[in-house]
Length: 250
Ligand code: AMP
Image 1 (cartoon, rainbow, N blue to C red):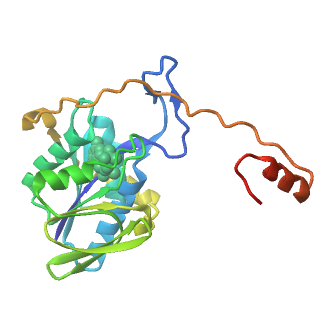
Image 2: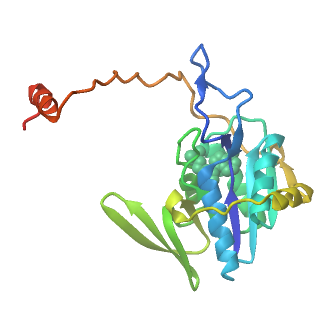
Image 3: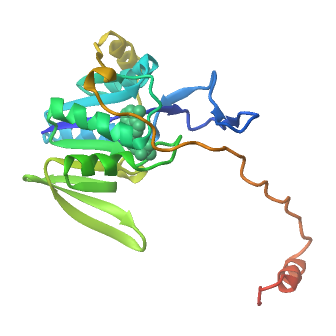
């Protein structure tokens, strides 16, 4: 089984981003970037399938400018076999991502495509679903377990009030939840070795795909600040305050 994993370069999850003074977007100038955390889960799952003898090759792909090489090097250091940079300076929205990934699927013919369930920068959670729809493949989104059973994969997903288990025929698209696994720690020697590995670069403009954004970002604003809390002196005082609060019956 050949697996394709999509990895996005996003602002590091520890960083609190600032909004530009004109509210036109967030300011990511000079900010630490890294691999989207859910995409690390996607890579980890692919690696585990290979270690169990279920997968033969893992290819990581990232879409964006040449700076995305760092997340591909991270993927190689984790253990993927090959890395592809689909280079573009276009502003990518989930539909554009899905269309570009579809072109890579046509070239690589993977049996399984694993994406993150969402990118932590735009929180769209759409690329996997759109890709499955464009390819006409079955999809198992927000996967918290994944097993290969013959020519099928069985995916457990967390849904409201419980879990849902789906069997998907291959080829299929899966999006990874954080619960799927704990990604391995990347050791420094592996990172050093990954620096020497080749990254195949494809110019996205050669694919002739319409990447015109369908969405327009109107404004970015801070969430309304929470009012400061107060300290109460005793449980009794707390209960009296709650009683006095409209709508609370104790
Ligand atoms: P989104 O729909 O934007 O929340 O992204 C969902 C998933 O699509 C991510 O976790 C990645 O696996 C994949 N993805 C989105 N954008 C890119 C990108 N520029 N390059 C590679 N993969 C991407």
